[in-house]
Length: 218
Image (cartoon, rainbow, N blue to C red; front, side, top):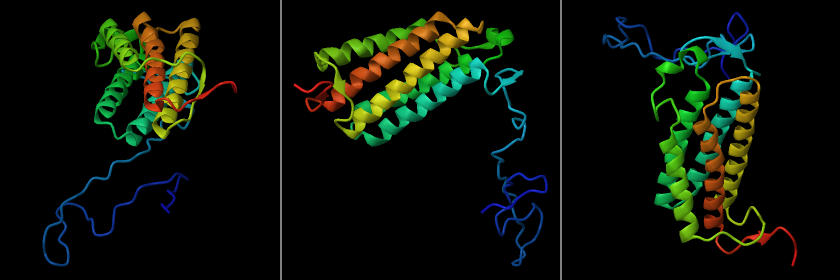
């Protein structure tokens, strides 16, 4: 258990045997300082969080809700990636996770500094949407969708992909709420999330194969 700091927070301590630079240890050798980064900053203890390129908003702000849910989607897709043994699917999911980092940066930017965003680094583009659409078309052509509603859970990977799909759908709803609250949301970003949930649905059906249960008993 980590020790408590005088101010009541949990703090990281220097590991045993690590001493400040320039200090000689028992063997006479000069120790090298090892920096241990802090995971906490205390700046969010007031319920606020920082935006990209400055400024702070509440942790319950519509923008925070939007990019926070995108962060959940990254983790959910990561679970599916960790579970699959298909190298092609694993690479595809990693690319989607990286795309979502772009989505998150786009949403987390101070609206007064959007001119500093870079396409496909911190700004969602039409080309990103087009790539998702191409993946959907290719996946459906190779693995046709079922002709009825199905119950998720046929395989571990398909179930994980369906969970990710649900999280992306929620992220899309949060983005719509942000837009209606007056926040800045580019059309391409909203379209990207919509297409991404469709792609995850298609990938889940592919991974489930022919073993999915219908939503109603026959």
